[in-house]
Length: 428
Image (cartoon, one colour):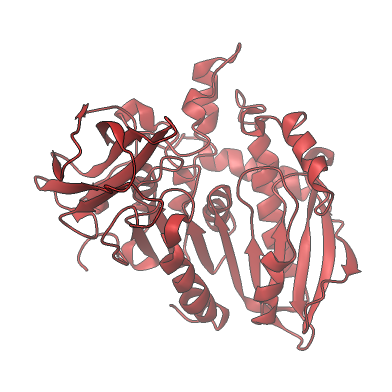
């Protein structure tokens, strides 16, 4: 394709799959959801007569932030239109009351001229200097890797718990898994989505069975396998709203330790004698996608990056009328926080500002109806990459989670095409 982004499109005709539970289906006239500037999107709205659908209303939200148009619908086949007057995205939300008097929503999305969507703000002038200084701070702390073998009940792999030292007395904790046979392996770094929870062994063991040396790290300085209540208590107390901790100061942000833990993990993998010396891939979803793309930009040794619905893009999006990606730092200004300080600090953690430094192939899945990590800001950030280095799957019916299999095609391409090729040192 001649656009600046190679769109790997797997088409799903209905944006909300028609099933026993669905009450509304939304069908665009372009089944891939892709348009050009000056084109008009025409969505056909259809209702399931077998269920109660009351108080129907709709909203059109360009950029996922401000309502452009809204209105009331009747329970008949309905056409809703939106004309693109500039590159960007639009979200259609259909709301109604179900038979339990609960408000529910169905969503549709569209995108126009993706390769021309621009960033909401420029990179801080001292961005590189800041991160160079943080890496220098990290290097002053010895790695001090502590590895303890453990059981995983999976044939053909060796499983270990691992901890390493990080800045300011903190730790990196994770699981290290590798094939039982062989001497040298390609390395895969797996980083985690948002929340506070333990690591599941099968998140790493399957990839080790496929021939990878796998390091899967927790986003937090916590044990990786305590009971469920431990993590719930952490999330309610010490780590409540952790994404806002220290967010007025770029040098104190909670994400400083998290980002540097990724850097150290990547560096550690390249220091191991059982690494093959060639392949180092990083991958993650949501907050993990945020960390994966950041790592690919910050650590020069990454040879491939795969990210699904990545967070952390476009923190200043509201300035240009679009919603930024989680954690939406622009609005994390409650209490006595200084909004200007919060927004300035967020620029140093905005993934878009790391992307231009990425040199490896990148594969990213973007949900066209994702309201947690909206597509417009992600695409704007990825436009900083050279087109030969990236492939983007626009998942037309995908919110942030894999609802009704909306992310299955991306997962298939990741596990069956991209990972095997990258593992073998090839371009997918």
